[in-house]
Amino acid sequence: MDEKPDFLLRGERARLFPVLAETSKEGRTLSIVLACMETIDDFGKALLADLGIKVGARTRLETYTEVVLRKGGDSKLRPDGLLVLRSGATRWTALVEAKVGNADLTTEQIESYLELAKINGIDALLTISNQFAPMPSHHPIAVSSASAKKAALWHWSWMYVLTQAMLHLEDGEVRDREQRVILNEMIRFLSHPSAGVKSFDQMPAAWTAVAHAVQAGATLSPKSPETQEVVGAWYQETRDLSLILSRQLGEEVSVKVPRAHAVDPALRLREDADRLAKEGRLRSVFSVPNTAAAIEVAADFNRRTIYASMRVSAPADRKSTRARLTWLLRQLGKSKPDNIHVRLYRPGRGPCTQHPLARLRETPEAAEQNGQVVSSFEVVFARDLAGRFSQRRNFVIDLEQAIPDFYEQVGQHLKAWQPRAPRIREDRTDPADVGPAAMQKEAELGALDRNEPGEQSPAAPQTASD
Image 1: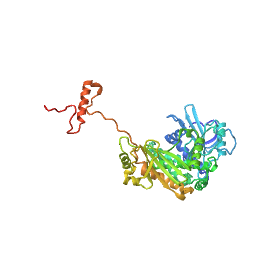
Image 2: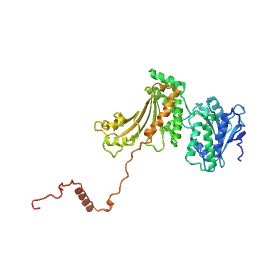
Image 3: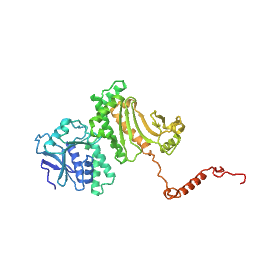
Image 4: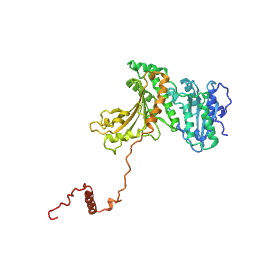
């Protein structure tokens, strides 16, 4: 067994079957998860790789609970866990703080643990709770810039851990029978209500207030606490939605974030709050492996409607709008047309046209417009929530039903067009091997072949003597 780190005064190795009081739900849940990360080598390394931590074949992971550190003697500051990653002489360490059920992390607590990490030479603080973040580096709790420099700060939701375990098991990456049994038991434990693991099930009170304000024609301030709280809740809900889709599809579905937003969470919040204030709209983009396009999801406060859409290029090998539309309609042949519309885009800056899918099936000629050929299609799903839009719990229920419905009706059927591969010439003649005279002769023969039946070749006019 590896020696305990020098900064660790006391600590127990994480156990699969912890002996803890009934009141210590988070200690029990965290101990089981940390023990599985250490026991199931590939699972633990996969989770750490998501933090950007390089994990080699010889890297060893140690996990501890009931942690007491040598420096920072405040007895109230007792992290729930500790990760130690060893690779030769190199060591990476992280404190772990966990919350279960309705308990939330607080700014004061996180900043205290970041200070504790700094004075003990620990590299990072990892928090785990039922709060959601769009990516591990974007923490759901804001901390001061000074605290953020003391140690790296990461966050997982319990649902993220559960989803990764399910995907890991389904992928067949865990081949050892005992490890598969252990991972399956961890999944069963986390799925039980007693573990305190919850999904994001309702928007905050500010959601209702902002929705009513927009409906009343009020002007939102992007800097107001209510606007920013609504944007933050949208991030949490869309992250939870990506995990739901991941579990339903058996593939990892992620929220696409522009690079500038990925490195600067404050910029992302500021720009999305501006969009909400100006347009009354929130937007996220989901990436699903092997689909024709990304899925854009939006919540429109003005129309009290949620949208999902995918945009694909029209097939360039078909010359008319009618033929290109037929290509799209064939793919959506099994889709229920309810609430599905198709937007048709043409070259230039002109506006797109939009038609219900049902109408285009009956009268595809409706897509024709002044001889302009469509260049791309956007398939749009719209669901009017009416009064349910402003209801904190019902909005989440409806969104988490609508997006999987859209994927089932549209996303899994759409295919991106790609040009056909070039074909070998029938006679396999290499033009580089043919002289000028032969090429001229071949051109003349080709011209004869292109004449219509019964048409006289201009190269051989008939005369009276013929």
